[in-house]
Image (tube, rainbow, N blue to C red; front, side):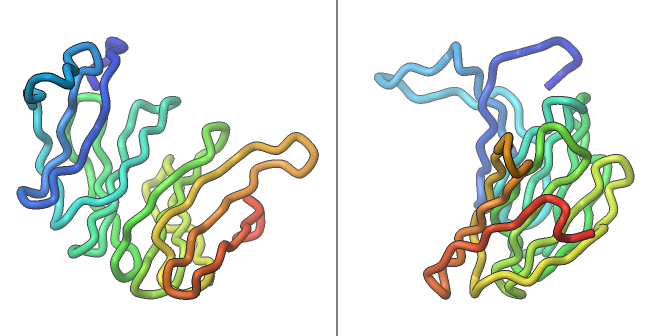
Length: 162
């Protein structure tokens, strides 16, 4: 995640509360994958979102109720307090917002990536566990939230939290 562009995948290692970078060029299904770099985050990292515009990484930490923000120098620059049991995380590539599911409080928190502050809260179904955004030309950015507890899907328009 340095300033130069690298091809890699981020994985969360729950037991040791780190995010690891794995070079996609090193993957071989016949041998173990080496973990060359690990970044210490808060307790039980789950979801990961990479903001390709800012080169920041956002990690939802389930047991600490935070989102860790990692800069392009592989340093945690802040931990943002969010709702209970954050799990899924996504963003809109063309905007400054990141969305994190809070499975324990049945909400989505909206984080402004320029200030790293929570700017909105949305109520969704029971136990939201993942969120994804799509840019639909006729309607704009639309988010889809999987609610495991209510076995439902919430649909969010990007401007509905303002």
